[in-house]
Structures are given as C-alpha cells and as structure tokens.
Length: 86
Image (spheres, rainbow, N blue to C red):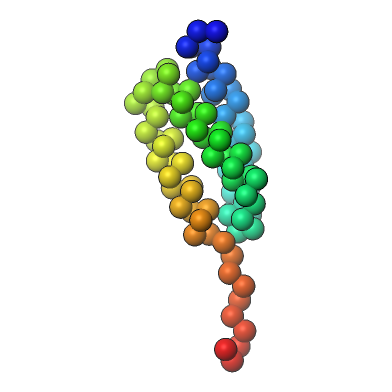
C-alpha cells in the first residue's frame, strides 16, 4: 500500500471513532470513561498522522484538539457536591 492509501485508511478509521466519542463528549468527561477517551485519543492520533501524510499543515488543528481534549478530560471529572455544614 502506498502512502496515499495509508493516509486514507487512517482517516477512514479515525474520523468515525472520533465523531462517535465527540457526540458523547460531556458524559465521557464527567464520568471519566477512560476507554472512550483512549479510543478518542487513538482516533485523533490516526487522523493527525493521516493528514500528516497527505497535507502536513492540516495536522495542527488536530494536534491542538488532542491537547485541548486531553486537558478537558483531565480537569473535567464531576466532583461530588459538598455537603451543607462542611
């Protein structure tokens, strides 16, 4: 398989997975669904490499989203409500 074929395969696998997770992003972050987040990170990484092969400048928005989504996930866990009087 040539480089263009690899790029298409990475994009074809990465986008559907990433979109499914993004559609459920708020529960993924609030409930800290690690397996969902890891699937998302792997999918965005595949997308990033796919674009890196086809058009390197297109990598940057995906890298930015990967960093932003990781920070969001790490900071986004729902904390239990404080009990009154504590």
